[in-house]
Image (tube, rainbow over all chains, first blue to last red; front, side, top):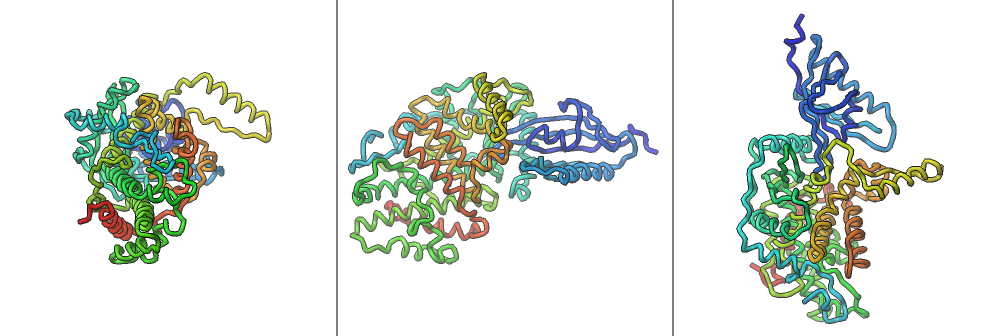
Length: 117
Length: 451
């Protein structure tokens, strides 16, 4: 069994329109700020490296960049499946007029979900 | 001619971009200045810019086709050099806070984007070269249209009985879409033709009127066709369907300078638009729009908003949305900032340039959405549609001869463009280019600059 310290952390980038959308999509609790270590599902912890907002030409974007470390031998594939289930379950569950678009890039793989708020 | 003078027919020609106005004089004077030296953005600011630009490329239409180069080289076209001389001169005369500075970068990136960043006390604004392409295409076309309209206007007004009280010169070419004779996509076969020039000439110059009136009408119709072709091209360009816009800019050569009032200097207009964009983006920093900390609101606005929300909660028939600090409100705030900091005698020209630009950009947001309905549905989470932006800044800043019919014309024109069908599924970029190129050839002949 691989010791926790030997597990390679996974790079994560989350793109949304607001910090609230990102918090909702990932189920983050606590202050989402640079340096924060936040528990994720599937036994993983998210360390927030950078968090920034930018109002651009046609959209305002919030980008969260961080590392996910896993406390067990959870593989990136398991984590990606967990993220998928979380993102897409939320997309099905809600029914309203406004849509939140979330893009998650984990370990180089991109997941996108539209969640109705 | 000053704005107070008339066209000779009793009609007031509204034209705040005319040569000789205070802002135009500042622009001319800046041409003798040395362009301001620009520092290189720090690694941390550049990295954050790349992160956000990369995020947009992932999510925006056409973004996936764009590869972000390892090194972001600065665009060095003449427009950039002119802007680097003009913008510091403009800021020197503005009431902008000292945080607004002239460090605007123009990275060579084939994706339409503009934004500003702040990190550790350093601020930098980035406007991609694709924005410059679009601004130049727009400004040159508006310049040519103003020249043609100026040549035709006397004859056209003489034929009106009674003549209109006021005509907004720069807007004329953008109006009347859908009307027979003024609508480019009603010219049968123009977009399918290998060489559309003869067909377009035949359409434009077939008139049984006396020669002077016929020529005026032809020039008048030509301005509409040219503006519509530009809008079609702009939609393709902004949405990433034109990979290499060089040939578009090569054929859209602005008319040479002439000493007449009813003209628009294309370089001047382009510089005003870039100025508006640069100050708008910096407003997001100056007003802390990119901060995650809650901002202090205006106590009066807070009182009004809270009262409205209370009323809606108590009255079952009323609904209300609190748009304070919403994306919608922040964008509108950023749109207002350049106009708020501009001195009074520059404001009219800047409002005209920014309104025309946002109206042209409405071409990249077509599809029939009513901006009021859309903004309600989106609950302030997205940027306002361009027609809404034109409505907002004109409602807030129009004064003097602009207040009233001119401001309403600007709003209606932006709304009309935004509700037209997208060009995407109708004409491919190459088809639009053939028509654009042919129309520019005809226009050059009409202003005496034919090959």
